Length: 117
Image (cartoon, rainbow, N blue to C red; front, side):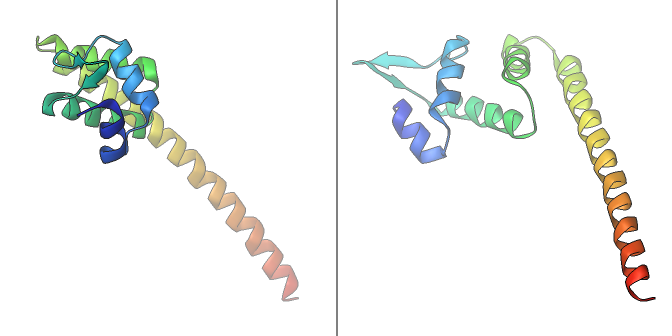
């Protein structure tokens, strides 16, 4: 599958494919007649990259995570640590947003209460 085909078929931005290739993680990706060819294992890796981007990993974090994943050694603890840190950061943002929502609702309540007087 070419880069363009992979991008269109799996809805993967070309930038992600370029990023993947630039990291040298493409193992089985081969350049044939000027076009990159992706196999199933590459598409699985790209799926993981998309998931990591979707959950808020920066490009540098994605690269680090993928290098750990592809290292072949038992790097599960480091990967889990990265995921836990991202989860904690997301929870912090959620809690902050919940507090904002509570304040907003209080202000709405006060205005509605004053309107009824």
